[in-house]
Image (cartoon, rainbow, N blue to C red; front, side):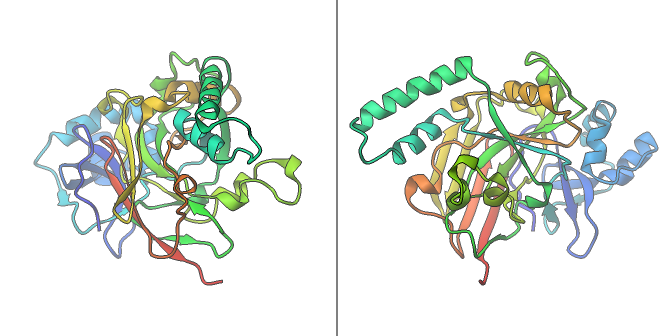
Length: 330
């Protein structure tokens, strides 16, 4: 069932369905929904199959969406009672790692060698200096995720039997509006349609290969199990988010706050990340650029996910997702 938590701005986009119906692209306004297949069919003589179709014609559809959001005499239906799916099916997912200053410092301190002669305070100060230098001089760290890992914002998440240390990573996701290749940082935000919430679940035990450490990280294994990326509930247009670099990211586990950090702590902002990815890849409408996880992951707290856990994730102006963990039978 859909949540009544309201997104920022006059409207948002979502993918919804009746309990036994097919998903449809919806315009979400004040706890009610407009089926965009019919609405855009009348306005533009074109029926979008899904939200990605809307994004593929974003410059054309955005002014119409603004107008529709103000029209009361349309076939609106209550949001309550509808199933909310992931808001978009991307072709590509680009994920930023080690992008929050405090998060990286916490991880480095937690995993330092027992023989490290430095005090905790000395270690934190040295790592902080490295992070500041990285933000000023280095490049973002980005890897690829699988669209098949995406699930809805209220769907159960199955924890695979092989996952020994499943962890949460709530983060801001930028949704691409139009093809972007080799765009500058100054123009990068022009290619962002809006923002949504992603929880980039990770099995900490399989981040690094055990059979051959020189290979390094194994992102396929640790991050891409089915359902490991709860997404949504909504795509909030970029014009409704004043500053993506000043949003609060909050995750609660069974009601207890675990992550509560501002996107101000990002080493590389949305524009820098989109521009960086575009120097190599060609970003497509509906693609996701995940911006990294702030401090407060389970590995920091010494409390990882298990059967029955409930995660509630919210980001300023983007609504809230609520997912329950279900342990897989071995």
